[in-house]
Figure 1 (cartoon, rainbow, N blue to C red):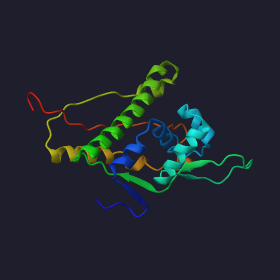
Figure 2: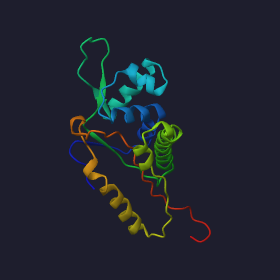
Figure 3: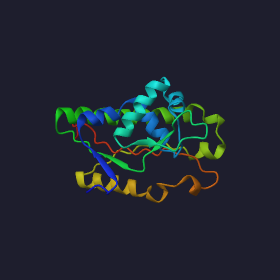
Figure 4: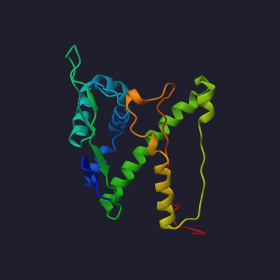
Length: 193
């Protein structure tokens, strides 16, 4: 599939591994909400110093994932926001470098998503009943061909399309950010496969 006009494609394994840094993943995640944050505010999320966080923000800017936002009234710190330019990461595990980059990004993504779920589950009794009741953990093992696996992955992604990209002003009252993670992963070859 050809990338959209406003899309930057990252396919170099070294660049992909650079995006997998836990602090960068946390910053990407925070900016994806539509919030505008300073390096100091991002530092609170990452546990790093503001200067270290500023370094990570500049690297994310280089990859088109973050950009400077208009200065705040006090003008002391320059805020950042998510870029409106999409970054498409092309993972190619056919070479050793590509496989290492794919693993780094995949594992960093899983770690970040696991940490978010763990935080919610641990504090579940503090959440309103409605939110506790919609939390779902499930898995299903299926016997699928490569083509069927692609079809399942595309169908799962399509289920989210009507909810993606809601601007801050378009979010329904009572809504909150919800991480929906789908993982389609074949079992390693072994017995019975």
